[in-house]
Length: 304
Image (cartoon, rainbow, N blue to C red; front, side, top):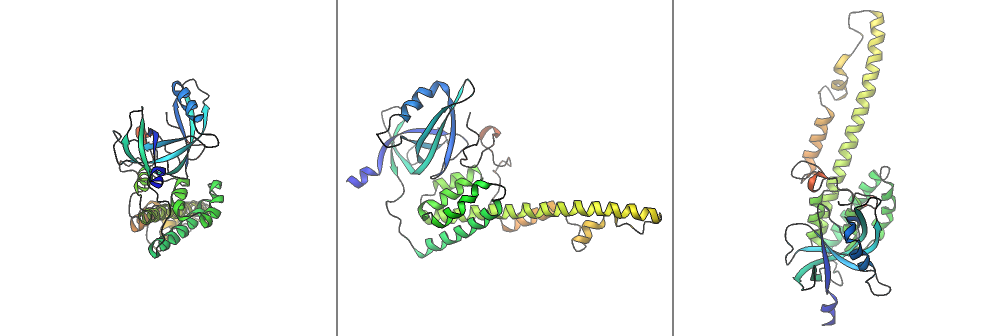
């Protein structure tokens, strides 16, 4: 049928290591300048008035049927300042599933996984509302540090449920594993359940770091005041009655000697349902220990 054919197409497929492009995200991808003619040719290959597209799939061994990736617009090809590297700017559009390889080099028959029309349900509506609320709270907290998120407030209210979850997670710095899990979650309700977990973890981490930062500042201020107090008491006598010494943290915490690190651990252990870092403990890093940046911010690191 015409409908089924419009949801299936042949695409050149590119695998990327250590990064995930989600629908709605933008990624700058590095490649060898020896491949520049191919990318430039692709940029000029789209029909008049249409952007050329390509399939982007996270690297996970050999390409095989059923793998999930994203159909991406090729926005721009840029020559790098160095001698060996150039860059392509990609915009994620929608999820695709690999169906079968085609004789043409590096091309696959793919199908679009998103239905033409999303059916609403009470469960989905509730999860979308929960996601919007969590995302608002995180946006308000991070806005002072990441001005780019300021425009996200309007998007949170206006974006359709079909795109909101991917769009927001693309704008915040979550782990490779979390992005990959979200990409592979085709069902919309399941995606919002996972999206709520991801954003809730980010919100908990932000609140914990903020709390510990405030505690450290309070301790530093208390230590300075304590030193001043000790200095004054030493002028009055050497009996030690005038200074509180190292008891300032104990007194400020209700008599319990609790460090900021212990507070952070208690908060994270109490609320998280998964790790904030990769399983190897290296944090938000890709293969080879290279930093992964938020989806794909325009000024992010490019692959080598």
